[in-house]
Image (cartoon, rainbow, N blue to C red):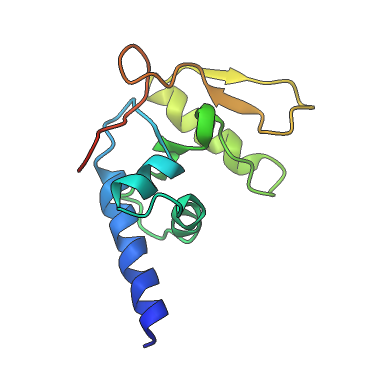
Length: 124
């Protein structure tokens, strides 16, 4: 296995371990997961790891885009709607945006880690 493939395998496993730590009813961003893992510019790779996730024990729905936006997945909105529904079941306040928004149809109402639903520890 190439060095690059080994890194990707390790990185994906590390993302999954980190995401498992997010408490129910809280969310964090792809970028914050990347930062916690020591790779602050790898937010997209965090998204890729979650895209290929095949483990139901990882609460992937607790990871959102910057500013609390639930990312569209190019599937006509089905994935974003599923994520919004799962978060609502955990009592996370979700705002539905007008359909013409380019940044996503759903957003977490408050990403503050003090009074909202955010989970932003300084380290693991």
